[in-house]
Image (tube, rainbow, N blue to C red; front, side, top):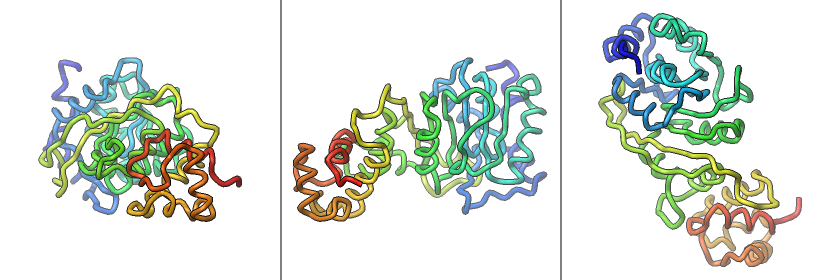
Length: 288
């Protein structure tokens, strides 16, 4: 970090003044809660292990709190922002506070769920305070779309962090846990208090670290086929897999055959299975 850190990063007064000037009021609809604490953004960058050669993609940069800290640490930062006013204002904030790094910053004014390409070199890291209402779909979309992202650190609602990092057999293990595990080794990487946000959310937040696997689970099934089994298994999570996968397989009998061929008990439930188990079931599923 530079010695002029305190001048570069946004504090509570900076955030409120910038928001007032832009006429921005954080909206619940877009899950907007702006980070107003410079120590928190430093901690996120540090925990993310951002390196000087990294090309970082940030989703939902808001007023730029985290963006500025990332831009100091990484080679390049590309921010994806859906909000018209925030997207228009962010380049000027970067130019004003980090003029010597402004050429290393790119803004994509778009819905992150619709982004299929990014300008400049391929991203190596994803670091973001994700809008809580779309955190999981955005995370999975970015990991699926940009295979060069090796390291991810996202701030999400605490219970979503628990779900993403949950191991098989845990009460909160479910669709997000399995799909995230398809791409990466996932773990909780800390908690974030409510008072570092404006407005303060009525939920706690957590950091989740995802280190991309060298390769996805070995299987002849496609990712879409594996994810279809995952969705079916947890759609009726109280049911045995024989019953839960009946619709997917065409009948309970066909589901039982696929499960036995995959070496999985038809009486098991989805929450006891690893991502490799789901991949094995998909291999023995109905032929399209």
